[in-house]
Image 1: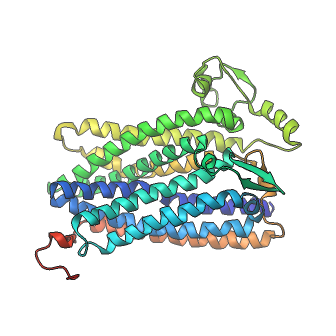
Image 2: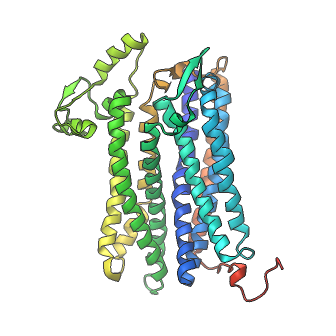
Image 3: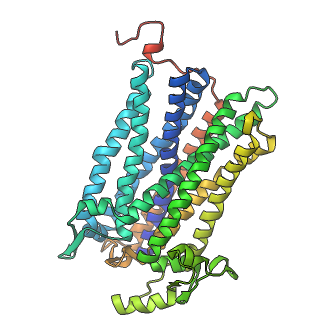
Length: 451
């Protein structure tokens, strides 16, 4: 094992850990904004209580996401300086827009929402949480646009060994980004829906004997709808992504299916040895008889095009990540659809369903993690497809001992943060909704402190 291997491990550890918070923040922010909107429109106390309850969970997760995201930024200067030099002129614009526009908007309005409960008028306070939630989604767009450029670089030229942007609009409207952004956003809503359902399942079980679970039933129903609709979005955009992968990243597609040779009417592999004829060709091209390129034939073509080297990603990880993503994601969505059916027409949640919702909490998290591994490992051995190899991206002069030290420190730090996150979330969930949320100033009988 050399410094490159450890640098990849370090970036993988920090990125995957950070990505656990990102989808929950994106989806939970919209859910909290929806709850506060319901309170604004109906005046029902239960919506205000749920807004404050899930709002605190959202804030805990948001804070942890910011901390882990800052640490991730250091990776580029520590271990990947050659990569930073190559992509800097392209990445500068979308990442600056993310920081100065989206994150600034998100954090500013979130601060106003936190401290504005007894100071802002009701409508202004509601607008703050919506602005923060929309900001997190806009932030995701700019980051994913930069990430999509690594898979399918557009709007640039290489000058003196560096990529120079020639068309910002082409970068922001990269077809890979336009498919990837809604796919990731949809997955974020599934993660947030699964999280809300687990919390509601816990409290419906606790209040089952007292009959006080009506509030949690309403929140669970809303989360079931959100998760089911998000599943439709993920499936549709996943189909689009598969067709783009056929054109832009054929090695990733072949690796995800374990297809070694160019094959007409290529089968879809459920597991090794169990295949459905012609389905892969149809999913990739809408033509069941189309030819899909295989890893071994692509390897020979890439050697002729780019020179000697192994251009195949880790076949085992890519193959099984694809299946874990589909199975765990479909399980979450399927459970949501089943829950909607069983609780239609105000029917109560069966105890077994509440328990299943609680126990299913890891499913969407595992699914999005597997999807991220498929996306990033499937691009290997490139950091920028067709332009920059991962082996050429690492910082020169960084020793194995230095990377091993930072990897150990980051792993221990992130382990401690994981414990802190789990303790904070668990403590707040178990505490429940004991504290009543203060009303905005416009709704209070006594004068606001602002006056």
